[in-house]
Length: 446
Image (cartoon, rainbow, N blue to C red; front, side):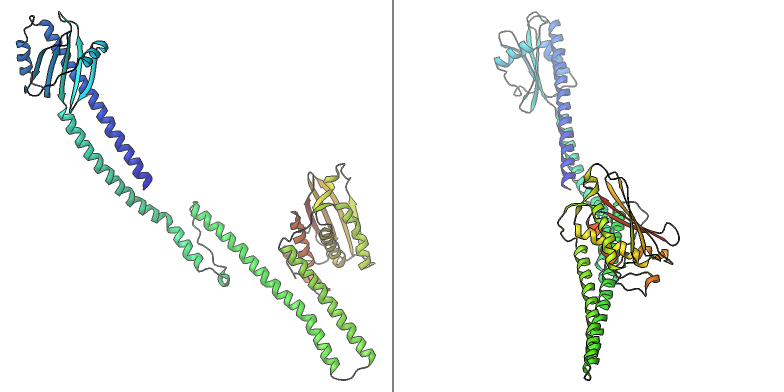
């Protein structure tokens, strides 16, 4: 409204003063023509006989309002004057007359009147002819224009207010609908979505963006719910086992061998629970994007440690490592990150491959592409269901073909968090039936 008011006011002021200026110029031109006409008559009159000129002026049908004619000689003496009313006259000072002689013609204001003075040199002796009058028609037209502009100004303000109010309500109606819908969305019904229209406007884009946000939040809530449920189940199982074993043992006196067997079983359950707790803590730290002490880490050195580490776990595990030709620039082989976390991630991938591959063998290849480092893990996967590929990085998610194997389903989830923490990518695919390929891409330090 302020902008509209300013623009309308500026337009009205411009129109008024532009019209007034043009009207003033036209009236001054009319007065000049009147003075020149009188001068031409004066040139044809007998010397010092102004009675005929007075008669001609009185007989003029289109006399201007309050018209006043004054003629001055070179000595600045008024030698002729004419007015409808003899009281309607005024004197002109010598300075003004000299200015007229110098410039040839001068236009100025004289109270309500406009004055046009012309230096006429065609008579026997040069004279200054000054004609003044009131532009009554022009004043009336300007007053009428002023009234029309004021009416148009306030009408424009009212019209712009009503139209702005109407269109703003129409414009903000989708916001009201979005607000009403969002108000009813909570954690209990986060599956609700904003309505999407076929119109490609900003409100529709906002609704689409908000729906995508709700989808991500819903996935996070569902993942968190599954994580808590699975973690609770995995932790409660060894605790229940320990409690039951202790309760059964305390019902009667046992031999030393029986006590020793119970302690060994409890120890195994405690180790199981400790390992699970450690993995959960590591998973939680990486999920928060926990701060890591970044340093230059050579990927080839990490991969060289994996065969030895897996050999300690099982003599049947075999890891074959294949390197491309190492680049001359050492920075292309390094990653800014944590040596321990990356070693844990690669060890988890290789251990999973060896554990679940029919031949317990994993082939690892390292290659360098531009400013990226690519590590590929290949192994057999038996009867793995390809539909489960999208879920293997979820916590506690395990394939249907390995349900009888020991494990928690946290290894690949933890690995993915570590790779993302290092601004990398990890993907799983089955290039052929019975073959599993896991790709890790990390940005190099170069």
